[in-house]
Length: 471
Image (tube, rainbow, N blue to C red; front, side, top):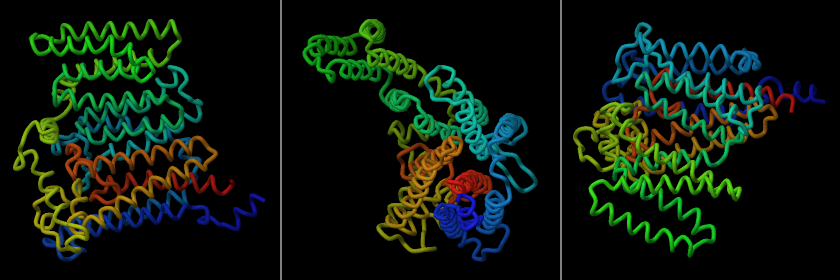
């Protein structure tokens, strides 16, 4: 019965053509907007110096790659080759640190003649395959410390190499893999912890460590007592303490001398009472408080030693710590002008002024979305975002239909990569996130990005096609 159904559907009948079609539409939209940014200088498309012409070459080779992946390469090879591919990519990430030339503060590019390739774009593929392999073959359900260590090592090794390349944007994409791990069994507390650390980083940077730790103390005690039915106990103990802390902060030059011992007592109490009463919520709260304290004290170290100067300046502009619309904030300022000038339906294709005449830096790469906003308006921007939303949810839907855990995990990895790129790229073009240099998938100019996302997506299509042939 299975064999008859498979033969009737043919080789291409089991491919999810909705996903393939979505890929094609996004690639076409990208080409149109790349041409729009350079048409004033290069009216003819087929001129090699034009980015539009080069993008056509990247698109043509990407189509060939997609066809080979779908119809020529046995799908079982991806699982079997995931380990050697991962190891090879890790060594390439390390090697590029020493052999690459500095490009805008980053040592992440390999130059082969006139072509520049960024291994970090392809590391997402090998890391996704490796993570899917270890989770499925080693049967990780994240109920033991061993499971966390194995999955963490798979992700942290390439992340460390990418950080050493000063390619912070690509490293942040790996944070999205936590959604994959959550689907496969890690506690929701890890998501809460990640969200807390990001929030604390912003609050500490903007307001200082004392207000941050005071907020952590109040929120933790509120969640453990007030929200769990012990309202009068919370009011009787915490209101006097909070009042005393505020007075201490105002009148004493070193408020941390009072706040840190108090939070240490809070952690110890939660651990002791949690252990005696078998209250996992209190014990988890103690861990979260400790992690938040460490994160708060690490902000200065990370901000001044991990981030590059231009990234620090852009974060300061984003948080309102510095006003510099003609300097470090110039990119975002011009991007918001371009998007805002598009109105509801845009100025029309090839009629953009901000992007066409070069007011927006990197308008064909990192800031391609502002070209869409200016020429296609709010309606066009929403349509493009909805295309990405459809793509991501379709990948998740197909992944959930798979009986193979390897394919399901890999599908979630693909969806996470697209999601993180979408959120970060659009967030930075509209001024909600710092400018860190990350492309809009399949739309931004660039061979590495185009090939990387094409391979990432079409490997999933090939694996999913093989699964659908038999189930």
